Image 1 (cartoon, rainbow, N blue to C red):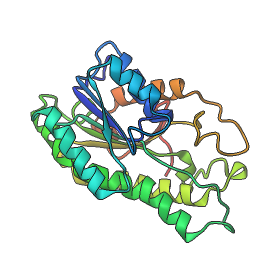
Image 2: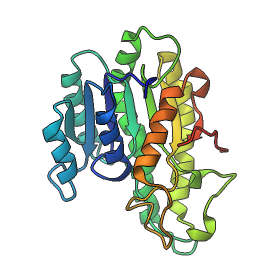
Image 3: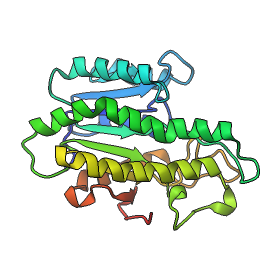
Image 4: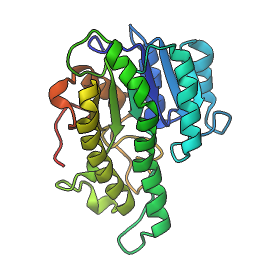
Length: 259
């Protein structure tokens, strides 16, 4: 990723799937970040072994407790990250944590809708708010002109299932709350682009593809795309983004997607 030069990056939902894939590949690039903050709800919980093994090998990887549905947890995580950055700010925030509930128009419930929105929409909003001062700090301290992921950026991991024009894979799964939440996340990204662009912060929504994760394989059909290929594609795309992409909705191959 020759065009991606990060001093610091934070990934939510980093203990598995796409989040863990981001951590692995960021640590493995020729110019790895000075700090990779990998956040998850419970660092001592199940399925943490791989991330813990990485942290034991890479002193620049810090595992940080963060529950995107808990404002107090988000605030505590931001304070902890700030102490490690020592005034340099946060270059890249990847809002990756997400969830899906299998549902149809007939079976969708208020409880599931609220839970999915809390994770997929309100979570990225609150996390971005909490880390905004650090993103501004990175932008102000950067000599780079314009906007880029190497300077300061919010990347919201979205889905083309939330594209109102495409409504992709409808026949394979309606997942109403998930689709609605990703459409809302796309609007949040647009709002962040309008609100934070003047501060030197790029905001973009990225569709990672239909990926072989617990979430991607939760339906009746196996996802076609490996985590490694998806993350490698997304990191390449992130390295190419600039001011004209602020507020864009792109996929892991760099294609602009319809809203």
